[in-house]
Length: 419
Image 1 (cartoon, one colour):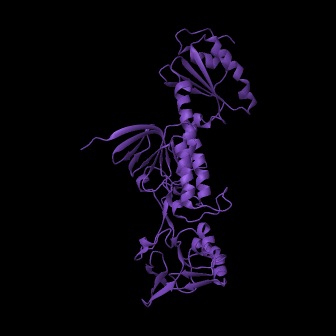
Image 2 (tube, one colour):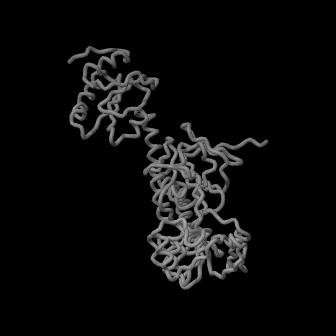
């Protein structure tokens, strides 16, 4: 069997939709060695949207494919490498992350999960022929204006289906809603249901599900099956919108990162997953609104967070935990006067040991992630370590005598403690 190649990167981004491309732009512009891996189409689901009218900067609207081509071009401009392949597995816990494809193992300092999601589909006959740009859509916000004066069908009766159907009614001539329940039962909240039932542009076909989709090149008929009688009713439409939920592309991350019950990746506002150096952004996250604009925001945050993580990792290894001298770290809070007033004394102590000791100072507020690496969550605090980088003492005793006595245990030439 052919042996896999190994390549090293600062950042590996899994997924090439709007969030992944934005993260790539930020990382590339920061001059990080960045790789983006996409298994199918650069731009993700956004490329299937004929017209996007709510993305800032395009007052006349733009196509999803056109917008994603611009994202792609910009990422390449900043030196981002792009591989069209499928990720088979990941190992994320260690400092060096591993991303496995069929032919190559990619080693990375950071990984950004931007694998997105996919709409849940009905799996009715012929559905695959009309997905996305051939009659079946999954985003009313994106495609409503293009359906002005047309007849459209909405599949589903949950909050998203009824709210999006109501939004479509502002543009479409008629919105036909297929509901699997008896009249007037729906899966949405009562307020949305009552408003939809009172909407003169919305009609409902109860106890139905899709049996098949038909049309020459473009969808023009949805065949609905009555769940009680088995009768098939053909319904002529211009387009169909499916709102029966989304599924995240997170199969390879199961048991690797923290996920919600729906298998979306859970992050904080910094796009951190809880695993150092691993971030997630875009539709793969557990979040409220999934749009190109929100994906771009996520990607920007993730890209900056990855850059910051790499910089702090290098600073932590080369400066904070340097190995040339005995180490003294002083953790303080800049807005706490007593701990701030100890800074000159710590500098005097470093000078007193005549180049035997290296002092590093960390503001707990600004350097929270550095404090997390050191396991210190209170201030003021002193940390002492050997030239081998071994922490030997962590103490809240920050008076001059205590600090100097501890350093005298570590240095080659102890000095007299003068108070």
